Every structure is written in structure tokens, then in C-alpha cells.
Length: 306
Ligand code: SF4
Image 1 (cartoon, rainbow, N blue to C red):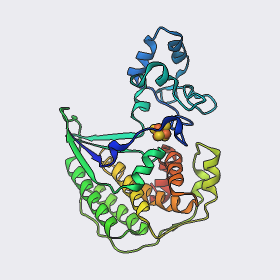
Image 2 (cartoon, rainbow, N blue to C red):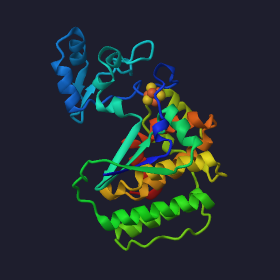
Image 3 (cartoon, protein in one colour):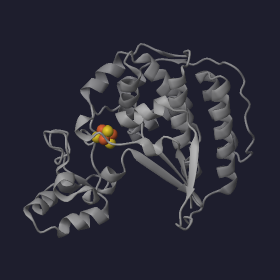
Image 4 (cartoon, rainbow, N blue to C red):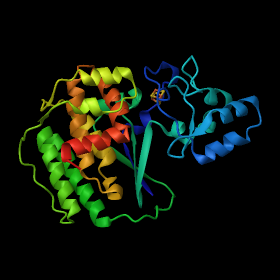
């Protein structure tokens, strides 16, 4: 398997108790089956605590029961009791992996860091998206990847990255995304052209419909008056690149070519309108919108009508 990483990927280090955000606060931590089995075998008082803290959510996933919207193992010094008691290897996959993500595409896998983590966000905003690769001895995943669609999406992604180097207008990118989506759906696989600036202004009623993780998020998003075309800085372009890099090729599995464009354009427009320091706005957007499936569906519907 060939693995592709952004060049800064390996520079990431969790700052744990020095983190201004703490990823395990507020979110539901899903526990993988292997970790749950391991926790169930621990015959100590801490094992009893682990078992008492696990439940199944409405999707049938095993998760830790949050207490006052916090992971029950996040202690007052912002350290993880599982890590302290049992070591890093005892963390469930969700905690061991975050903020890293990976997606495999047959013989290759793409890795990255999430904008929802302030440390990772700092790296993403400071560095251009340049890739390094490394092979390992894992066999390619056997999957039913549509090779034509996959190559088309890779070509589209290259075009977007190239365009970002030259200029970027959100309206133009959104229109490009709509055409790419239509061409993929009717299997013509033609590459759309960039057709110059188009209108990118929309109302903010959608912020009334979103679900929010925090009251702070609800209040900050609802203060936005409008989202409009803006002059884009290098940081805005890196945010745009993150969303396209992370999500566009995944459309080979779910067929949703438009959503990454909607998310990238909406993210940049919203982050620029929040009136917060950019890193704070980026993490807030990622946690409240990017990581909420219901909000993403609403967004795609608002911008594309499906
Ligand atoms: S948000 Fe990032 S830096 Fe903060 S605790 Fe989580 S992984 Fe560590």
C-alpha cells in the first residue's frame, strides 16, 4: 500500500493538558469492539469503572457515557484517566487516532490531520499542502472502487489545487463543483472549465436550522449577518484545500461530488465572517459543522437543493 501524507503530518504532537480545546470534551467517544472487549477483560476497580462508563448509542455503537457533556475519563487536570492508568496503547481507536484521519482507495491511502484540533489546525494553516509518500507491506484493500470515477475525481482535485495557486473565487469554485458533480452523475467525466467570478452571497437563515454542540457556537454563528465573496488570504486557501483534500476523493464511495465543494466554500465564507481570530473560527466551524452529519446534509440541500 502506498501512503500519502501532507509534509507536516508527522510534526503533530498532542499538547494534552495544555490544549485550549480538548477534543474529548463535548464529543461522544465511540469505542471500537476490540477496545470494548479489552476493557471488559480488565479485572480491577478501574475495569469496573470502564464497564460502567460504556453504553450503546441510538446507532448501536458502543460509546462512553458523557457526564455534563464531558468524556467520563477526562479529569480535572485535562488529562485522560485511561491513558494515566493503562497507558496509550489502552486508548480506543477514536482517541488513539484523533486528530489523524485516513481513507484508503484500493492500493493507496491518504492521511491527514483534522482542523477540529487546535494544534493540527495551526500546522494546516501555516503550511502549504505538499505531499510525501511511503510504502508499507499492507495488501491493497479489496473494494469496489469505480476506477473511472476515481481518476476523474483525482483530475478534478488537481485542477482545483492548481486554480488555488492562481486565483480563487468562492462563487467560481461552487459553480465548478456543481458542474463536476453533474458530469460525474451522468458519467460524461468531462472536466468543467473555470468561468470567472459568479455571485456568492447567501442569507444566514441556515444558522437557525443547524444543530449545535455548544451554546457558544450557536450564539457566534447566529451573529453572522451574511456570507459573501471575500478576498482570500493564504490561510483561507489552505482551509479550502483541506476540505477538498479530505473529502473529494471519498465521493468515489458515496457519489457525493458536490458536498466537498459546498463545505469548502461555506467553511471559508463563514470563517471569514465570524469575526474571530482565524484559528479559533476554523476549529469552531470544524467541530460544529464539519463533524455533524445533519448539518452537512442541511448545507448540501441549501446550496444544491438535494
Ligand atoms: S484537540 Fe488536539 S491537542 Fe487538544 S487534546 Fe485533542 S488531540 Fe490533543
